[in-house]
Length: 115
Image (cartoon, rainbow, N blue to C red; front, side, top):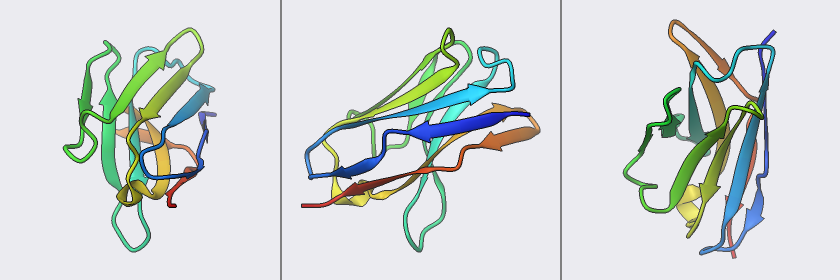
């Protein structure tokens, strides 16, 4: 059974930083692409960042230059380093394992950017 557990969310002031982690278990990790999504209140879930099995990354325009996705295959963990946070980054952040036709989601972690 695949489990994804996010951590690292919290309340931060504008301009601050947070690092989210997503630990995977129950599956081979290194061969699958991993994604971070977010969902703000009243909005659709949106893709934030992708790291492929080969380590290539891609980002939503809204977070380019501020967020960095990375993975540690030895720890079965994907990270999202978030810098220069803005109030509009407030959302529940989810990690996703992309196994082609099947996707697995974590339970989400709340990030609130507010003074």
